[in-house]
Length: 344
Ligand SMILES: NC(=O)c1ccc[n+]([C@@H]2O[C@H](COP(=O)([O-])OP(=O)(O)OC[C@H]3O[C@@H](n4cnc5c(N)ncnc54)[C@H](O)[C@@H]3O)[C@@H](O)[C@H]2O)c1
Image (cartoon, rainbow, N blue to C red; front, side, top):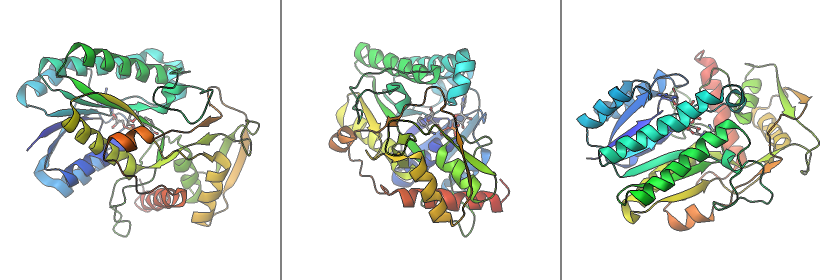
């Protein structure tokens, strides 16, 4: 039985990914999280489904002595690193927080992997490393040109991973560049109000915010900019369902087990939907005509961001199942209703 260390898995993407690892392999999941933006309810859901295979440690990644103790007590087969700060405007105001929590803590974690011979590392990267791409879709070898400290903090982590994989022949990584994730775990039982999905004290993601409007948690949603060079003037993004994103981590793990080399993969569907289209789908799925406010452009929002996902499809066993905007929105909406009814 393999021991896998997951950082940040009390959060949205991490908890859903751990669920799929536990469901599809016989691993033990060791979860490090300081609950800064994660939720103990996510850990409790995993514990209730997988009992003694979940080991939660409430600790900050910057507590290097304690993290070293964890490495010295358990032999890990792989580290899957989700923990990060991820609010772009905050990264502009507090760059040191982002370089410390994202880049420095990642470097420390990589150092421990090398010291303790943990030779597989899966890293949560982001489409933000591309900045404002000149051509679409973006390929993994398109120019990296982040436009905010968050994107730089992730790009720098990728560079450290790349150089360490070159320098230490046993150390391999997969960096997954996520596009826009939404929805809830499909194995959630909405009738019993249990499952995993996006919890957030201060949501900023479009589908989540629109669903909060649909269930009456918010009064209105803003659309930022109506004069982009796109079909309807609003920004275009590539939306991916959480199950497919979570399962990409399992595919990355299988890839590392089979190939003993490092890769970077885009994880999106390669479709682009405008903000206005997404808002309309949320209204259609929920049957609620919530208020939409046209707002100014925000700094640093690229007009369009769409992935080319050929590489992950060709090189791994990843087979996306939910490439359907209505399915993604419906899943997010049912989850939001569950949160509202349980007062979360
Ligand atoms: N959500 C997205 O749309 C998106 C897009 C691209 C990339 N990502 C990346 O995916 C990863 C997970 O994002 P998420 O949406 O699940 O966010 P999240 O906020 O739900 O999860 C992040 C988790 O990391 C934990 N954490 C943060 N700093 C920590 C520290 N110093 N020590 C211990 N735990 C710490 C938080 O408590 C939280 O549980 C992040 O690395 C993020 O940059 C997310």
